[in-house]
Length: 314
Image (cartoon, rainbow, N blue to C red; front, side, top):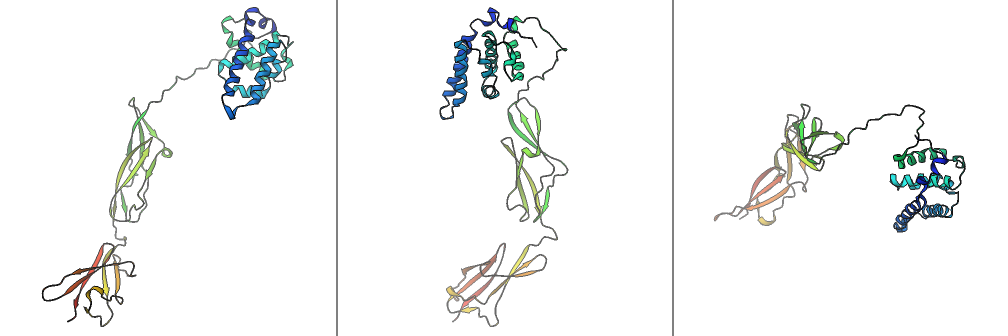
């Protein structure tokens, strides 16, 4: 880093028009802050105004003002490199206007930082440099421009489960997702960055199920098969029982009394269960002929049903 001293900073070429330019920059920062309306930071505006007054009055208090940590922190968050260089020029003017040395400020780390900015600002006319050690050489990697994603690909490994038993839960193990880019590149998508949507009724019955993989704003589907197994308990049939003496003839076919009827569901494991009246449904179909009035009563539950006939009493 260049060693700066008062003689260098007091050189006419260095100091020419510096004060006016600095005031213009600080005024621009104040105007930008005023435009924020209710979110305006008046403390920051006051500090900029104090700095401008000190510069224009030829005072020597500008260095302590701008070296305050809170002021530098405030302007550092909203200024580009050009404004940081202006801050460095603040310190330069302070020295030119009579500050004896850098020791007037308590923030010595700030002085080291602004020295770097001043050196960069006036780098075209560098004085003699004094090095205490060999300069470091760093190599920056070339900037990488991210191409737009044009789609995704979904692949599966042998661990992916393609067949499930009724009642089994879905597993996303073995799913691999890749993002496709405009330049033809393909990049793996992390498991935490893609989702797999499964139907709420997944594996409730034997059939093919579809799950949806979503990533990068795109989606693909996968199909798996759900099957019955020997252990799968499913409904196989339905039957109705009637109380002793139940008469399958009736005076009023439209209002047959079935209150004594009991309905049972039979399952693949040979178990049975009596159904409540609100679980099964009834359907009545007129099956009358010229010689006889008759109604077919159908009892149904899920995929099974049973029927019986009731004839009009003569």
